[in-house]
Amino acid sequence: MKKLFRNYINTFKGLSKEVWWLSLITLINRAGTMVIPFLSLYLTKDLNFSLSDVGWIMSFFGLGSVIGTWLGGKLTDKIGYYKVMFVSLILTGILFVLLQYLTTFKEFCAGIFLVMLVADSFRPAMFVALSAYSKLENKTRSVTLIRLAINLGFSAGPAIGGLIIVGIGYQGLFWVDGITCALAAVLLLQVLHPKKAKVQDDVKVQNPVSAYKDKAFWVFFVAMFIFGFVFLQYFSTIPLYYKDVRFLSELEIGLLMGFNGFFIFLFEMPLIKWLENPKNSKIKLVLIGLFLVAISFVVLNSTSWMGILIVGMFLMTVGEMIAFPFSNAFAVQRAKKGNQGEYMALYAIAFSLSHIFSHNSGMHLVAKFGFEVTFNFLTIFGLIGVAILFWLMILLKKEKTV
Figure 1: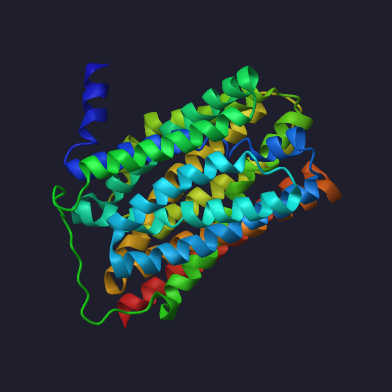
Figure 2: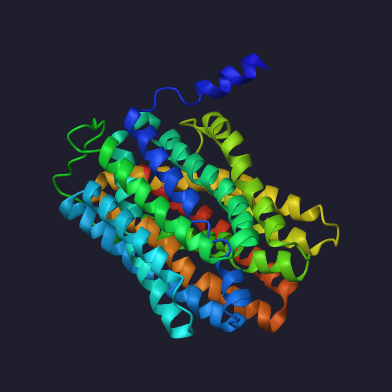
């Protein structure tokens, strides 16, 4: 047991102090965004919106995310990642608190759009900061540490969120979200000030290549959009499936989704350390991850046994454990040839676009065809993404031979 624990601790060695601080800031911020997994439930149960209304609200959620991510990438290249992160955290905290006072369909569409525009400007800035504070050989593990922080926060967030809903209602979630964003901004100001932080990899590209002219990166972008489209169903249609078909309570849903984050917290870093080998293609690993996420839906149709919910969550969890760190590492590596903010913004925009179409399409598919057909469609769509990643592997091999 001691040897196992020592090996686990060793997987974290070599990461810079700044990466650890960035992870803590992300943990505080993510633990506070507990309203997001419960958003579809809040809109249908508390505000009495229809599934169609929820779908459109989620599209505005995604649209704000797309524009915010694009804007964050542009601002990061112009004024630097530090200023973008700080302003984003402060304003997001204020907007989350104000969001609870919006009750009509139009108000909530506008409100969630503005919240996500500000909140997701943080993402490309954070990715560039992560790259700057991390040594070249530690990029993937640094990304994994950030994901551990995200998922530790996410495992605690829904569980605490479920308790808050039972105790004082949904409004309590908005206050906690706002306060934690403000706390993350204060911590950023204290520990990652440019004069205090040590940059490990300050990339200056003399003749940067535009990410928008990189064909292989666009193929990667499409695959990541599909991955995001399928994965994000776990934050909209899946909670409703748990509630309406499997009859789970909000607390049980929070605990089941919390299992995802807790499992990632325990096992992702050792898994990435084991897989992080120059001989292993990053894209091949992303392909395997997407395949596991895709089949996590079809297994739910196979039996009425309640344990299948854990099997499905396990498949999705292992899939994202592999796909997210290595897709992010591929994007960081590719960004070396151009404007980092632009590349990382485009990577994040793939998932932001998924928000626009994923939740809305999922809600409409469920409303019209039911959960079984929807889950079959998601599996097929995910397998198309697997095929696109296989094509990308061929393109990258051709690049090396030119």
